[in-house]
Image 1: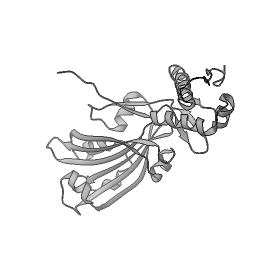
Image 2: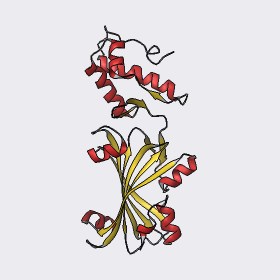
Image 3: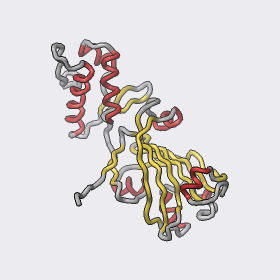
Length: 250
């Protein structure tokens, strides 16, 4: 049975908007496919428009909703896809992305985009509790899982804590490098999450459309002596990543 033939019909007599009905029809089908772990490319906007006898604007509206909710992601010039693997991260654990993916047995690729030694801008200096213009390393890295971009991460680290970092920046796990080479035992972190649209630069690297919703995180990581070691800015694809928290009622 093809994807289109498995879809229920739009109720043209209902007061529920067509785009909302279509979004719900697609949700149900995507949910059933996801439970079987299938990789899926959705029919094109034209195909959905012809199948349901709807305008392309209506179809696009439905797909926009699904993308915002994380059911699908779009690739420029390729179409819409159902995420074949969503990553869930427990917010109460301080682990590096490399360690997290290794625990899951997932293939993680790290692309070092830049490693610069420069004077600290004011926002990074405040987070790291150092003076403005103090030398820091700025590492920009793209993280990929199954060959698909997952996150863009920008780390700011006081140069005094990790001299010569540029010689080792290609290492997979930054946390492991800091602990093993520089004897910086990472202990805890303060993290802030917010949702925001992706920038054009980020959209190109993460292979999502401009304006797509992302999860933006700011994290300050401290060592066992309470000294800030890293100020991290990271942008995660909203269609590939979930954060989970275990809550207890007191």
